[in-house]
Length: 523
Image: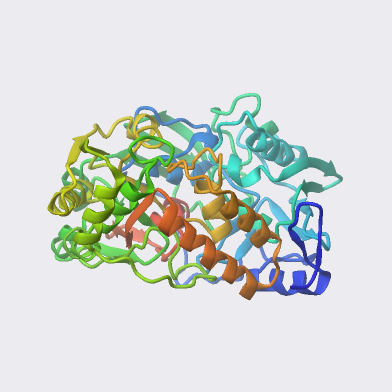
């Protein structure tokens, strides 16, 4: 390996290899790029009208503070009123947003982001570099409860230099711009420090009403700075957590778009005049996190017993109806550019029985779930219960109410059903949910070797060498971690006849969070 080791033992890249790695990642180094990514519309967008979405994943506990965004509804809504420093194209390329250009020092420890001029907040205030800097500072504060905190803990300082925001890191990170695309990092006036729940951003829609758990909506912001989104005059999201009611709302024309289509209903919906199914393969995965620091899940033999007790193929066939692929207990699949396949863990009741006996556990395993977690969550839990009991593992299902699940069950209960939409890079996914101490480390996984390799991968500009590190990191998570990941799911949404401009995005469902922002009302 080229480079000199610094005092932490992390490899320090030289200029040539850093440039190679940056080019492989699509990171701009001192050259401005088009804010619209050079993409042309296949159809001519039409302005006006009202677009409504009926969505699973809303709760009365939802908040406008982007730091706490966890539900599908708030994820979609935040992309209507807010914007990040950079954004990701559907092809996975970084695109300028509130920063129009960025570059790095030779060692990838100092980054400069030139902030766009002429952008206006919904309250009439002009965007300044200090607003951007304050946003990063708020979310990277060690006292922050932000879902992005783990991504930003490497930051030493954030300063303003003219039109630039200068970010200094403790350790090199060739992928820092990708981290700043995280959906929690919606830029707010003074970073949201004064009022994080004000819902004031620079996005295409100004908030017109916010009724958490019921409905949220906005009206087009007349002074919005770009012209490739914000076509409808008004947008609204109606919270419909019940799958049958959500489907009925689309069929009746009450809403124009719905998310989280149950795979078993796809063939029926396809027959409805004017309804179109939109299925996209991506990074989303269903996961059953076990707290590695909480009995009985602090015993790796028990965790392995449960991992071998899942019949993944049965779940793929019966829950997803083939709309997905097998999971392998680490959160990365072929949708990530540096993915390396690891031997698939099979359903093996004999090995499950062996590890369960070795664990010494004699109490029933309690699994918390709700139908609102993902389509078919209850069915998946029931299949899991059957195959676990067939392996001699006593298994109890505790059904939880949909309202408040993401605040009182997920990341609180030691074994539950959950869902991740994935992230733009492996570093972002691992840093958010698997690095020791990360706020959203929902398995309480802590492995010093894994943490060291994560830092080394961030500093490694050579994609092939970083790929090797990610392979070993994935193997550690698979064999020692608390994430039981049975399936990677396709994103299955549906639209009615009034919707035009839909484009697939593998990042998340609903066009990566931009469906209401980028679609328009058809003539």
